[in-house]
Image (tube, rainbow, N blue to C red):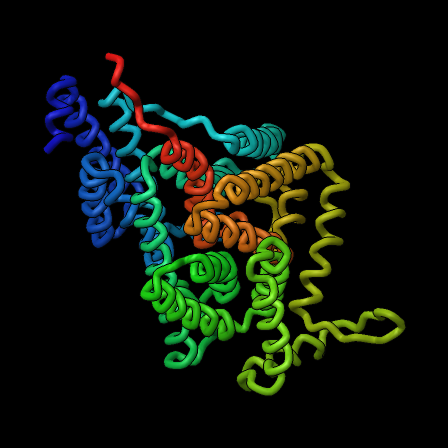
Amino acid sequence: MKVFQKIHSQRGQAAAVFIVLFIAVVFFLTLNISKIQPQYFILFLLGVILFVVAFLNTNFAIGILIFSMLLSPQLKLGELADRAVVLRVDDVFLFVIFIAWLAKLAVFKELNLLKRTVLNTPIFTYVLVCILSTAIVLIQGQGQVQRSFFYIVKYFEYFMVYFLVVNNIENMAQVKTFIFLMIATCFLVSIYGLYSHFALGMRATAPFEGAEGEANTLAGYLVLMIPIMLCLFFYTESQLGRVGLAGVLIAALGALTFTLSRSGWLSFAFMYFALILISPRFKPFLIFSFVIILTLAPVLSPKVVKERVSSTFEGGRTFRIGGKKINIDESGTARLDAWKVGFSNLSKKPVFGHGIPFGSVTDNQYTRVMTEVGIVGLAAFFFLLLRIFHVIKYSITVSRENNFIQGLSVGLLAGFFGLLAHCLSAATFILIRIMEPFWFLMAIIVVLPELIKRAEAPPADFSGT
């Protein structure tokens, strides 16, 4: 194999063997020191195998990672304060692949550590502010080091996905393969979501989400993926491709419906309006479809959906809106109260906030950010969001002549707006099962303009040599 030849030619074989053994020893000691149950040793062996695979063929390992994002179980490692320490298999896979990639960089000196992208600065700025904010709180003796460490690692885990993917994409064939795998994963997750509702009698959820499931998390993931598949359906010229995408879309829309997530439905509506605005090519069809859905939904909606909608305005507290009294249930009231609590916490520590994590879980990304990292952190967070918007917008601008990239970019921008709405009812940007796919897609979008320029560049002329 070329990889082994390359290792041998660069005298890196000994280093590679040393790295593999070192990682194996570290994993082994960690398992023993943590007194993890023996069956978890299987996960350790899988990690070692994946490390070798990732070292030899990073693309193949990334393909495994795509499936594991939504289709991997979670393991309970122990208890930390008032919260269980939970480790997902995809957490392990991501760290193993990332370490294998770093090991590969150490052996092959000509590979770059971090490709320069327009998102590097806002990402590192946000990470730095979060670490600084938490460090200040810990120095003041108001936090727990272990608790903060685990939360910060989870918060920034998806940035590892971004840097891993952005540094390993070299051509359009890779991009199309990865997107195909993501769509295949979405189909499997959607089918399971429908199964969990109709066969298990629960709200649609992704696999391995526990006894009660995480319906709102699945809804957020589908709000991200549906517009991408819809736009690829619009822009593809392959009839077979359209048939396949139509099948996945039907399954995904069904799964989203039966999540019974009201915030997921609202996020979908917000995403759909954004898609109408940014996709003039298909605006008439989108508007017509919206009118049809709005007309038929009250009649054709399943009973559980109608009951879920009507329950929004039952119980809870009474609000006066436009001179009318409207009841909002406890769930909706709690999300409204999150703003009041967020600003109250912000007033106590306005600059750098209370550190990560703070208090109980807040189902609102914006109030969570302002509480944990203050005004400085909120500014860094919005700086990151604004740069994400400009990156996707630029990809749309430079890909007018490429239907695949245009569909992918327009769909991701609409999905991004949907996630911004989803943030009002969930800490969306720290939910691994939403953020891993999102940052994977962002890595692709960042690289696409470079791939376009490379494809359009004229071939080198050696006639004068």
